[in-house]
Amino acid sequence: MILLLSNRSTFVSQTNQQNFLTMKKLFASACALMSFGFAYSQANVDVSTQLGNLNEAYVNQTGFVNMNLLTQDGNRNIATIDQVGAGNMNFALSDGNRNVIDVDQNGILNMNQVEQHGNRNEASTLQIGIANSTSQMQIGNRNVASSTQLGMLNVASQYQQGNRNEASTLQVGALNDSDQEQIGNRNEASSVQLGVNNDVIQEQWGNRNEAYALQVGSDNFIWQTQDGNRNEANHVQLGNDNVADSWQVGNRNSTTGLQVGNDNELHQWQFGNDNTAIDLQIGSSNYTSVLQSGTNHFHLGTQVGNGNTLVTIQSN
Image (tube, rainbow, N blue to C red; front, side, top):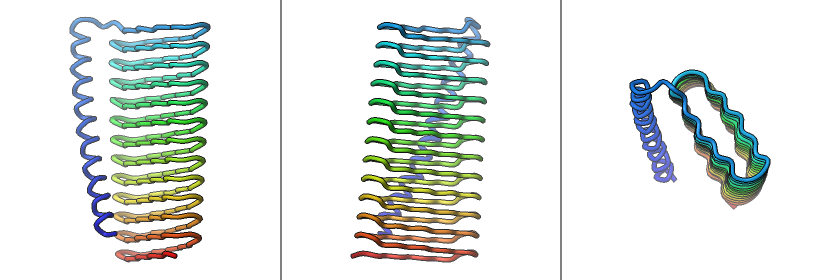
């Protein structure tokens, strides 16, 4: 178990470094593109294509070297694009019927990419600041994705495949990273990051799973993985350098974690059905590891203070 946790933590560290380097490269490329644009032209660019019937697109660009590439392939799709500032980029595709795209970019060098394949999907992005990046992919019907970024160098990725899934992310600050993936039906994922260099990964495979993450501070990390049906994960981090890792395989499992302070570490792994793990860490440098295998296990852990260690293993 310790080896697996170490490997998972090592992967997290490597992933965060790769994401940061990728964002730096993107920022540098965007700066180069913007410089090239100013050298040769200060005009905005819009290329919009509509294939089908009764599609609607409304594009408003104010500033310099903003770019919009929009394609609507199908019927009754709607897109609203507003770009204010310089060097903002939007790449959007609706492939199907009655899909909706709403993009608002206000600032410099913000980038948004959205693809929707199916019917009645909705994607919205609000970016205010510098060099924020959002990527949205939806495959299926009646999915909803929402990304709000206020600050600079924030990154959001949302992937949904199935029907009636919902994903939302809010990032206020700088260098925050949110990665949401949902495959199945009627799953919900919500991520809120307020601060600097926080990371959230939410993965849900199955039906009617729910994941919620809140981070206030800097350098916090939450990883929620759910494989099955009707699982729930809820984690809150208030402070700096906290880690919460929830992994659930099965049905109707639930994890809850509250971390208030700095350098706390929480691992909750559940394999089976109807298991519950609740952990509170208030202080600094506390460590909790919970492994539950089987059915109907219950764990409640409380740590108030500093440097405490709690390891729980349950099976049947």
